[in-house]
Image 1 (cartoon, rainbow, N blue to C red):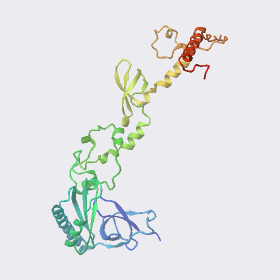
Image 2 (image 1 turned 30 degrees about the vertical axis):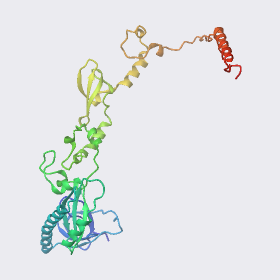
Image 3 (image 1 turned 120 degrees about the vertical axis):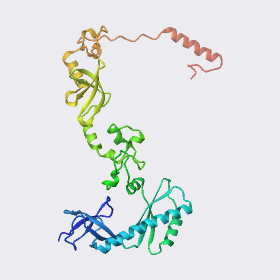
Image 4 (image 1 turned 45 degrees about the vertical axis):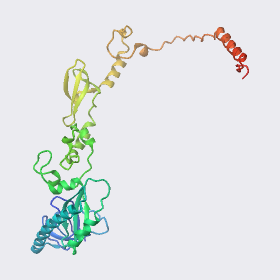
Length: 345
């Protein structure tokens, strides 16, 4: 029997986790359900119906406990109010203990109230000891198990929301991004984006997530385009590549006369290949030996065919006798002053 696997999401814009809903056949996308997780019971929303589910990562899927009732939805609203109260109390305790560089950004209760997790962020390097803060909150909420969980700056920006650095009314991470992909400065360079920090940095202080949106398209388009500084042959003459536009396959070329024009990629030819074909077909230039040629070919002496006449070898000049005589005088002087000569060694 094929199990009925559904994707459950616990946050409006969050990761989707697979659960076994074989005991509930009438589930639809958008339904609220209570599921059993490793952290206890949680209330989530059905995000998708998985037709061809992959193999479970740990042997079997967690099961869907039951479909959420009106009482469950009211209980969840009450827990959300308690989460806000717990976050305010935790911030007050943090201010009393004067722990620098730590910010409490949220609090989360499990649906059954057995666990309370405080989410915090910090810019300090290394691990921060928050045991005193956790013990203080444990005394305030004795019925729940208190935990301290550190989150990154991108998760903080996603939780807080707000306007994006590009001017859009809500940030991408708060609208549709469920996972944070690794972003590097190389992605901005490949797309020709200005490397000014204000241009490529998001509200979280990290590189913008949108740098990866078109990165693969730019990399694929650049494979067939010449690099900057390369010499190419255009329909109007030879020139040097100044800039490229990957998405429209355009190349900006500065011609030998100083003119700057843009050409489609299919109208350009590599300069080295064309020059080699011309040298092979035309041979050496007659005016190259006089220094009057500007064709850019190699010296005619290098391209001149080898003569079939035998080459006369010139013997090296003999060693001068005067040099030998001077060497004998130096050896005699060394022996006279007590130093060994060449014959004494």
